[in-house]
Length: 177
Image (tube, rainbow, N blue to C red):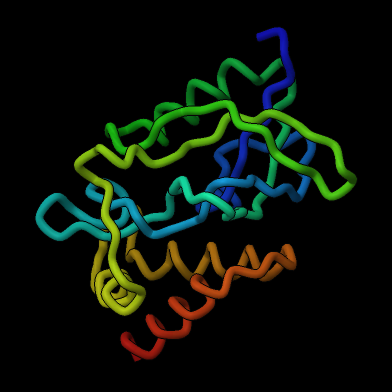
């Protein structure tokens, strides 16, 4: 690879990128919203009882805050291959190079995984239904609620507000006791 590889993290890549970033920057992606709009049949649910994981859903006027993670040049090919193996395990995500806005006003392009709204794993549930699903689902990487709580905690630690995730985290805690 000859260009700088950046990967945009907005969900589990925030707290488990699978590589050591050479640099991280808080960034915003416009025109997309973070949403539990993807049925998880591998990692946080099963085909019989899907969980929900985050994806970027196109939405005019929306903005999603997250982390751009720069990959060291000598690791770029291996990191991209490993990230693709993880994120493209099914046909739910589409890989895109999208422009991100940094706090200092600079723009960078990053590999970003967005939901395929025509795919079989796409869904749109109200927040209460999301909470019910997340509270009970479990997959190969553990309970769906841990995914939610880890993501919400990391966003909070970064100072990035996401009211829907905060509400979901609180509601799921109440549901599981």
